[in-house]
Structures are given as C-alpha cells and as structure tokens.
Length: 263
Ligand SMILES: C[S@@+](CC[C@H](N)C(=O)[O-])C[C@H]1O[C@@H](n2cnc3c(N)ncnc32)[C@H](O)[C@@H]1O
Image (cartoon, rainbow, N blue to C red; front, side, top):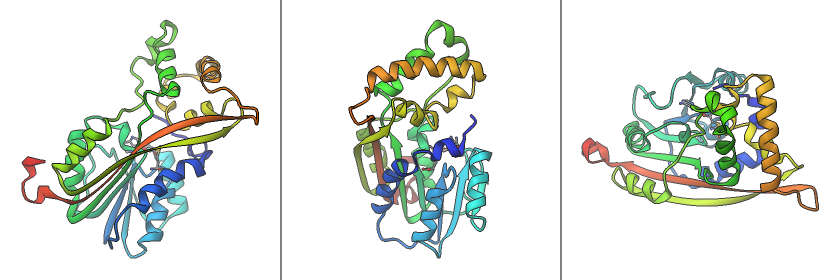
C-alpha cells in the first residue's frame, strides 16, 4: 500500500480529535518506554512525547513515506519501519498506543494477546480504531470494487476490519486487570460535495488506489463520487455530514504475566 502523508493530513483536526479523546483516557502513568504502533506521520507520537517528555518513544510503521514525514518532524525519536502485526519490542514497554492503525491487520484475538505480551507489569494498552465499515461510505467502495469491471483488479483489496466492541471487551478482560471499551460517533462536517470522497482518499481507499493506474483511479473515483453524492447529500450551507463511529479501548495491567495461556 502506498500512503500519502499530505492526503492523510488534509483532515488533520477531525482525525486528531478521536486520538486526543483516547490520549485523555490514559490513566496517570509515568511510562519509561512507550510505543506508537502504526504511527503514520508522527503527529500523535509527538503528542505522546509532549505528555511524557521523560519517556523513550518509539514509532513503528510499515510506510516509508509516513516514516519520512515523522522523522523530519521529530528527528530525535526512534522510528522503526516494520509490520506492526509481527514487530515486538526488545524489552517490555509501559504503554502501547495505537490510533487508527490496528484495523489494517488481521486476527485481532491473536494481536491483542501479542500487544498484552509487549507490556510491563503495570503497562497500559490504548487503542482506537474506526468502526464504520458498514456505513454507506465503506459499503459503496466494496460494492463498486465488486462490479465486473473492477473485481479482477480489486478483488484482493481489503479496507481493514474490526470486531464488535463487546468482543474486544471480552478479549481484553481475559488479558488485563482493568478494561475500558467505548464507542463514539463523530458527526463530521466536511466541506464541498466530495468531502467524503476526499476523506476516504486519505485512508480507506489507499489499498484500492494502490492497485490502480491513474486512468483507472479516475474512473473508480468518478463512480464512487457519484454514489457518495447520493448517500451524503450536500446541505444548504455547502457541507456534507459524515457520521463516523470509532471504537476505543484502554486496558491496564496485563494478566499474562501470570499465565500466558489464559489470555
Ligand atoms: C490512518 S494512518 C494512522 C496514523 C497515525 N496513527 C495517526 O493516528 O495519525 C494508518 C497507519 O497505519 C500504518 N499501517 C497500516 N498497516 C500497517 C502494518 N501492518 N504495520 C505497520 N503500520 C501499518 C500505515 O502505514 C499508516 O501510517
């Protein structure tokens, strides 16, 4: 997948808000070492450093373009190019933070156990993921990609997936002493008829556009914009309303220090 930091950062303020909501729910800990998994251009990693300036901060991401942007902004931090579904820290860390990234990898029961296994005794896991996969925006991308003219080239494209929030609570409760899971729907106001398309172009569409050449991208984009315009009509003030639900989880004190098998 080829990520574009500029496109992603177009909606910086709206994308930042859930990340801040997650950050604000992290209890009063003093991490010595923390990791930002799927750190992207490093905007959250920088905020983690601001909150815990004494901490050793690691940013992990698989996109060289995103890491280049992150490194340019925060050269003193440690940036690691790696697949977050396999990467492990050398030593246990006190905080694993992951905003809008974990949904890109499969097998969340396995991944949550792995994340619990990265943490020190009183460590904290803080994760936010989109839970909008059944919304018209995401459904329309899948519907168009399944059409005969696109299915051959886009059949393997995957926009990520999440479990239901209660499933995360159950999984985390087997691994951590304290668990807090919640969802929030943000009623995002985007400007212009194609605001939803522009939003999706920075994230959800990345695996689709990565498989298309410029001409195909224009054609797929035109078909999607038409459908999105009907699903998210322009309001009298020229904006479109884009409800977006997200799942949050903050868990503390991994129990696998007692028995790795139970979690
Ligand atoms: C939507 S961005 C979020 C970036 C950042 N966490 C933020 O909140 O601004 C998703 C990031 O996850 C990264 N990503 C996706 N799959 C990954 C994987 N398997 N391993 C590491 N990073 C991954 C992408 O490269 C991208 O930078």
